[in-house]
Image (cartoon, rainbow, N blue to C red):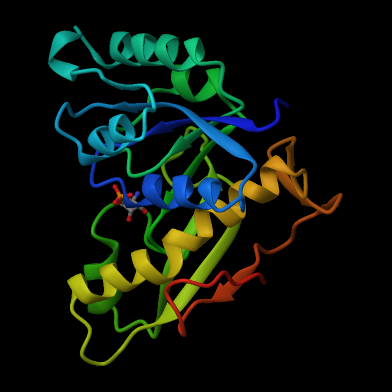
Length: 226
Ligand code: GRF
């Protein structure tokens, strides 16, 4: 793998995870460089952030492609052109085709705002509150053909507060968990602590039975390692 590791980021939205990854790189906590940011939305704030930082940023508009397969082929070509070691989904809100996933298998990762395998899919904060859960969090996982179902590298959790709304809970999951968790997991992949073989995760050379799941209740800035 190249040093620093080359990251291609796919983002559709606000880009808080992208910002956090760049911040970890700037602090020297992550031996990586972001070599391209790709979005399905021309106005995604993630693209603006990337351009401000001098990172090549590209929007591919779905309406310019005949179908999902041709869109993903074009996207895969752009991504391949930046020669990434890792393809990092950071709030990428389009379902990827199996062809795209297979092309980057084993080096395609995502962050999902729930403690997987619970609450796959959308609106996780609302659903967690409706179910009366006491804990909520986020998971970094390898992407496989099944949505939000690939092997989990690492998770982080916080406790739900009695007066939480979906918004306050989601903001805390982002600020306290996601912003730290993604770079922690990426660092483990880049430095070889975590390895992915035969559809299974190895941590320190041993099969990982359960992903580490650290508590992030206390702070929004320091890093927790389980
Ligand atoms: C995050 O909650 C991420 O887990 C989910 O989409 C959201 C993206 O937020 N997949 P941002 O674009 O990184 O601010």
